[in-house]
Length: 552
Image 1 (tube, helix red, strand yellow):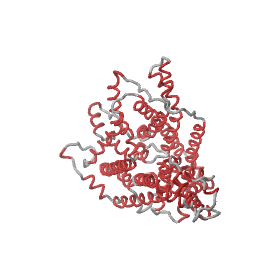
Image 2 (cartoon, helix red, strand yellow):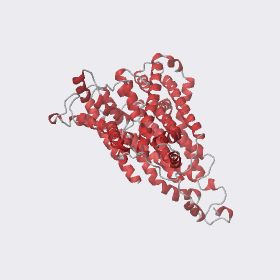
Image 3 (cartoon, rainbow, N blue to C red):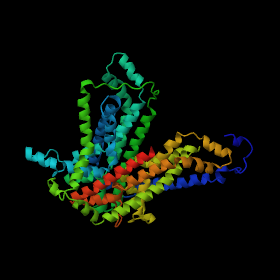
Image 4 (tube, one colour):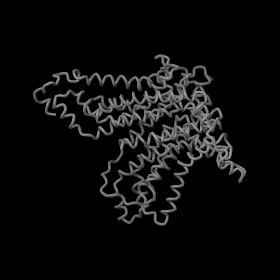
């Protein structure tokens, strides 16, 4: 900090520091890379939507029905996810519920499973030919619940969304000062009354943020509506776009799909704007002055603990158990007996046409996306947190923007520009979509720890004669490498089991593992798709577990 005021340090470049040490060139290169990955696809879809003739198709009754189904399922699943997530957060953080730590880990486990794999797991539990429905039909003459249809879509979207609400509300709950609740208790209020009158109103901003995030994400989900909704002709915008691209039932499918994608983009950005406006009006609270008193459940402690455990186990573990059972049977509807247990479904899944190609493509694309996102995320996260420049906020915001854009829109955007850059009908278009979607994971992983780290080591390096770029490379980048590696591993694990982008950008010979599982399910090979889904789920759980352990 003292070096600029005094004489030049030996070995340090004089004048035009940004130009001589290369920092300006690095910043410019990062702007070009992020612009190509984010701005270019968005501009392409906006341009085609504005100039194409796809708007007239939006008045078609099929499109209107799909739009209504998408909005209803997104809103209902988002609201249900917030209710469940908030309830679990309050139970686990503010009561003396037994086994809170184990229940918290189990409740978050749906985050570790791809939604389409979760849909297949739940079908093994509540599908038309599942053992539960077969037993119930034999007893009462009708199935307990056929998961196919709109109600099943809403339910599964909520199951895979409530962990997000739970994490957001839990983080907000830990910032609520316990003094407020204690003051209400001193004034004569009961513990339950203090929670409903004091704590819950302070959690409303977090609940609204989680609802916005979950609803926007569910608006364009493809896996669950395609597997659960299509058999009952419950069509959403994502499945309708897939039909347009695959069947060519409209004259100019790209123009129609671009118009639909533009509408989804506007809805998503409106949700982000609403959330930003809400965040500006939030009330800042003082930090915790005392540990919060947990609400004593009294005689209800054991019954509530049993009920909460049963609910969490039914949502998280039971579908995996039934998925495992279905994977070990030769065909749907076969009783689960020792003589019927076989590994034929695993053999059929691994030897099916395209499985090995899908696994190879998924591994190649996931590793490539992890490497590129890791390098770009490390550079962007370091630059925006350890330097002072007017464009830092813009660069960071642009890198994080795809988090608020549905995957359907990103896939359509790259479909629009693929012919112009020579990537149409190649697997590299899927890689580009992965980079757009998952870059933010590494940027967040890097920027968060660096923002909380003092810059004294870099200042010492500058005083010792290092250039700005050399100080960033030797100090900040090396400190952030573990975080970047964790983010890159998360990118790889997310990309290897991704479905929405891959199925919409599919080309001959470029099918991925998610597409292979989806095709097996659509072809009626339910036990083979269950076996491959189980493998993906177990590998994902193991990989994320190792990532969490290494990050600690």
